[in-house]
Each structure stands twice: as C-alpha cells, then as structure tokens.
Length: 529
Image 1 (spheres, one colour):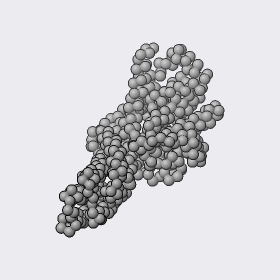
Image 2: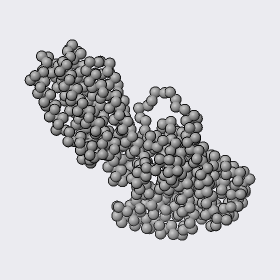
Image 3: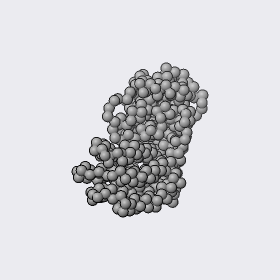
Image 4: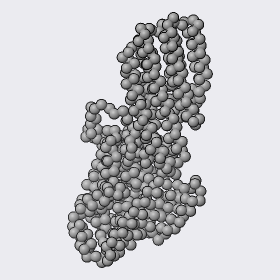
C-alpha cells in the first residue's frame, strides 16, 4: 500500500469536500440573504421561535460554526438579546444536521452530474449564479466524499492502521477528543462526519466508535465561535460560552447511554451512513428539547459567570471584524453602530449648540465628543469597505453604499458643531458677546434644524420614506428662515461689533450645513445618492 498516494487522495477528497461546502453555503447565503435578515428579525420573539430561526439559519449556511458566529455577531450588535440567542443557538445545531442527512444519500456516483449542472447554471446567466454555486458546491461535496471513501479501501489491509483504531476503540473518550480537535481545526462538523461515513462503511471502525466521534464533532464546532467572541461585547461572549456549555451537557448526557443508543439506530433503518447521520440529528434534537425550557435561566447564569467589568467603555460597541464574511450580520452591525453614533450627536453635541455660546467648558466637552464621533466614523468606514470587498449581491452592495453615505453625513455634522465652537471662541478672545436678540434668533433656527435632524434619523432608522420626504420638503422653509434672520440682523438687530456680526453669520451658516446633511440623509434613504 502506498501511504503517500492514500494520504493525498484522502486529503484531496477532504479539501474538495470543504471547498464544496464553502461555495454551496456562499450560494445559499447570496440567494436568501435579504429574506434571512428579515426572518431573523421577526421570529426571535420567544425561545421556540428562536430555535426555529436557528434551524433555518444553519440549514441555509450549511454550517453550525458559521451560524454560531453569525448569532454571536447579532448579539454583539444588540439585534438579539442574550436570552433569545440561547434558543437560536440550540436550533442552529439541529439545522446543520440537514446537511449530513443529505450527504448520507448514496448519490456519490452522480457527483460529476451536479458539477456539470452547477457550471452550466453559473455560466448561463448572472441571475442564476448563486443557484449554480449551490449545485456545484454539492457536486464537489459528493465528489470529495467519494474520494475519501476510495482512500479508505486500501487501509482495510493495513494491520498498523487497524491496530491503531482497535487501540483507540478501547478508549471511547479518545474518539470524542480526536473528533473534537479535528473539527476545531477544519471548522466543519459535516466534514468530520463525512469522514466517519468513509471509515465506517469500509469496516475500519464500528458504529459505536462513530457515534462517539459524532459527539466530538459537535464539541469541536464551539471553538471558532469562542475565538470570534473574544473581542466582542460581554453578551456576545456569554452567548458563545453558553453554546459550548450546551454541547458539553449534551455529550455528558448521551455518553452513559451510548451502547443503548447504538442498538436503537439500526431499528430506524438505512445503511451505516444513514445511521450515523441519524445519530447526529437525534443528538442535537434531544439536546435542544432538553435545554430549551432552561434558556432564560442559562442566560442569567451566563451573566453571573461572566459579569460586566467596570472598565472604561470602548468607542465601538457593535461591529467586529469576524462578521465581514457574513454580510447580513455585518450590515446590521454597521447600521446599529450608526444609530448609536447619531444618538451621541443628538444627545451629547446638539443640545450644547446654544449653551456653549456662554460656557467655555461646554465647548471643550463638545470638542472631546467630536473625537469619539471621528473614531466611530473611521471604524464604521473601514468595516463597510472591507465588506464591499466581498462578493456582495446587488441589495447588499446598495445597503453598504447607503450606510457609507450616512456615516459621512453624520461625521460632517459633528465636524460642523466643532467648527462652531471655534467660531464662538472668537467672542471670548475679543471680549464680546451676542445680544439677547441674536441668541434668541440663533435658538429659533436651532429648533427648526433639530426637528429636521430628528426626522431624518427617524426616517433612516425606520426606513420611512414619508418622513424622509418631509425633511426634504422642509428645506425651502429653513433656507428662507435663515435669509430672513440674516436680513433682520443686518437691518434691525445688528451689533455695532463686526466680530459679533461675523460670529452670528457663521453660526447661521453652521446651522444650514447641519440641516443640509439631514437632507442628504433623507436623499440617501430614497436612493438619491
């Protein structure tokens, strides 16, 4: 037996299998990204609906690891609460078993037919490319599985290989550990179970050993999510840890009953591959049904286990780099961060536009807040740029572009407020002050501009085009009001100081610039970019 040839065929089959899973998952994601986004927002209102969402999510992504990373990303963005995430995580483990059940069908002989059909769909029309990727991906999955099965046949005659497996069989927990480590390395439990199909069908390991390895494959899926959560919010870390504990509890429950479990599997029918697939499905369904009623308590325990540390909060709260590969999550995180950014401008900067006329400390606080806004702007900008380097569909590209425009307008608003602090500082240096009449007129324009800003933000957050149109229609009114106030200033209430007159005019110009960015945000919502 040529060990090099066997190793190359086995590793080559595994590589083709993993690549097939990748492009099939990518095709499924692109063909249903927008619907998936809406679905997840609507069906996480309780644990059972959340479990359903997790099942659908993992079935679409063809990977419980990817699904878990996405869920952690949703929690980090504040789109799903920690309690709701518990059910979604349990459901995602069930959803990924659909892939293994599909692979268990004896259709490896038709792998190349899938490849041919996938290529034809991919080349036929750009509208069918995502569907072509799905078919082509599964073609590679079945072809890779066929190669791995073929690589196992020569190993049946190897005494060394058989003795090694017999030795490991005497230590079932070693099977769990090896499968967990292997799955953690390749980040795909379906590939581990596909390898079990090849080993078991070749007679190299028993069904019982394969079941222990199934437990390990489930454990190994938690590693990627744990790593992805390291630099996320505390709730996201709690969700990743809960996912690991769920899997560990499931393995602990099943191990004592494994021999009984193995005796039941043949009664369900099917060949040995189907029995392994059924073991994987039953493990996750039972685990979900057992733990789902305790999800809220688990969330409370996770809060106690990972308490919030009293540390200075970082500027960026909701986005993390691990979600760039999942546009549905990455875009929602960017939108959530932008909503937070607009809230900081509304609550921590705009209210001081009037009070900072008299208070130097307030102006200094506004300047410091602008630095935070600038930091957020850069983080969101780089996050969206990295996402746009991915192969996004048309809807995702349009959304990313809108968010870039929105980010730009918010940052310029903050810059404008900072510039206005410098304008007001001229009064202090010259020992001057705005008159009561001038402060009153600035406040009048401020009220109109702030109403316009609040409407613009509300329209963008709620995707409300009527509110956006209201902002745009308010533009002539605010422009006319500014001209009238400037006219009154020069002809009725003008100060004898040229410095005061310049400051008054500059403050009016600043208000107009803020309003113009509100109009720009509304134009962006309406697709006028």
